[in-house]
Length: 391
Image (tube, rainbow, N blue to C red):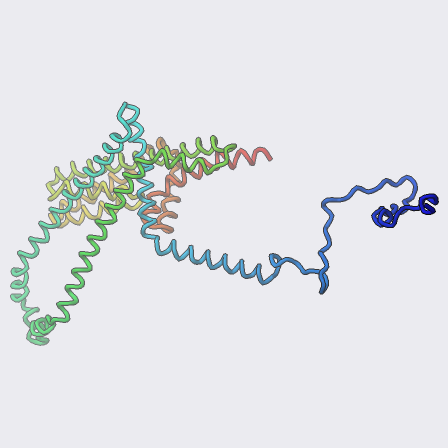
């Protein structure tokens, strides 16, 4: 009663009563709690806790070293799969180049599957036609060499120089002793190695052909899937620029095929007039070599000129003169006009791109150099230059 009369509170209420705020100078408002203020580390029994392990130098170095190892493992994987990746790249490039033909057939009302099958059948027929044009002459010449081999040996025996060398150094006896089981095994290994090379080449060609057909069939789905990886705000512009690049690649393929077909046709007519053996096979060689920019036409001209000189000196000289004149016409009239209309690449850019592509990636680099330059020019004109104008 005395406690109540005096106004004193019980001990429990006094224990939970908040302490009065400290006195502040007049006119100073109370500070609001700062949520972003650093929270002091909790203090344990043995002192304050240290920094988290995520900021530890050892953990950082370990994670960095793990990243380096993963990058090196990825490099090893890409290097080991370089052959397969190259085949995939070639097939994709061919699919991009042949897609305009599929699109044209679809515009004419042909279903997508039938359009892809028609283009694929055309490729197979061209490939088989090239094989039938090249293989019989090679087999024929090889058979003739084998049949005439005994005559060549008799001619060597009748030669006084060879007879004198045989008497001095016993060449025939040494050649006979060299035909041992070990040497036969080595020769057989060489033959098997050549056969494996042939079968490996055929397998690669078939792989590229099958992949090209699959890429043509799924070309639209592949494009749409790639566009989905682009942010929605930029997807429309990326779609337009990429479609233009793909159109230029297809136009380059059509232009290159047209130039090669013209070169092969001109060569075939010339060889028919001059009477050179195997004119169709040699025309196919020239057309295939002409697909390689800058150096392909020269390679085809060398092959045909050698065959011409084997026929006669006059025919060989005529072949050299024909290819010199035709290459000048192609290099300065046909090829620049076709590429300027299809790809819109200047002559200087085409030459520089072909040289750099050949130096970096060989024949494949030479083939894709001009479409790559066209794509780079388009990106510079539509993306880089407008951004520089805004600054």
